[in-house]
Length: 74
Image (tube, rainbow, N blue to C red; front, side, top):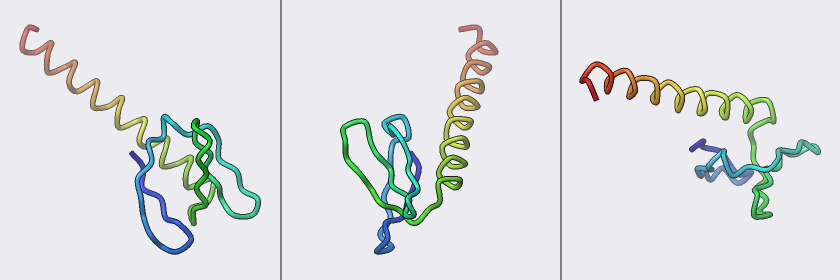
């Protein structure tokens, strides 16, 4: 999950795997695969960085788990 901020400063978490697209026109809008739209304070570049970091952390955790299982002989 990534944490984003609405224009009224309330924060919420979004599953980045369910984001269809991000628009900047001029406010940043997240469009989800189900059609829901969220206008957020983060820039498009900040969202892309958060999504990249989230996906990298998922891959890193999967690698750690795989290495641990191999070390245990599973």
